Length: 226
Ligand code: ADP
Ligand code: MG
Image 1: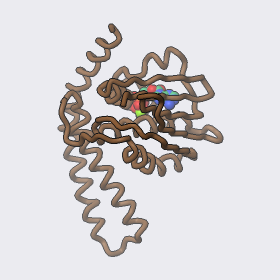
Image 2: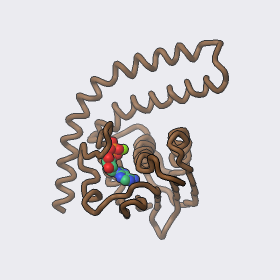
Image 3: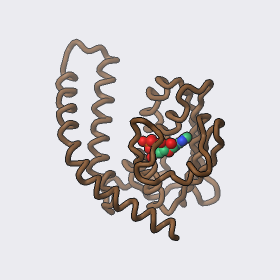
């Protein structure tokens, strides 16, 4: 329970910061998005290049959403609530992360077999999954035969999502720091990805279990009641 109180205090700190960050970030995003839209009108783009521009625009749009919705995630109501089995979110985010995995020489395995549905915020769930996938890929930087395995299935009345990597792994101590705002071991890390992930799953009355072995890899197991 004390852990829960600490967690909610951490979230308050982040929410306050988020409001000012959102404000500062909106302009650069709008400018970048504007130029990409201009570029997208060019007749000299190959279909492949056009695809890149369009995906960039989609992702900028996502960034904009993170800022207005997720970064101010103390906000209780949201417009993208759905009742579904997570299929759309899992597939979409897996596709979004593929180029990032390829650049990092990480193979991605994906399996989906979940008949159960629940209520959730679609945008928020996408962002939560992307945060976890990105961490897994980043944990495998320079690792041979790197594999990210994502599995979604049902167990009793729970929806289970497992995200497994063959990366650097964590000690017990490192695991206990996950979800603490700004805790990051990366040079350019924000230390906000896990805060967001825990918050998203907490809201669904679910939980995240972490199993990890230093030098071997990590499994994040998300358990969401249907
Ligand atoms: P960031 O990715 O910006 O560092 P996060 O909140 O997403 O911030 O993650 C916090 C820290 O948790 C990471 O810097 C890393 O040390 C650790 N971590 C998260 N996921 C993994 C993983 N799959 N394997 C190893 N370490 C991880
Ligand atoms: Mg991260």
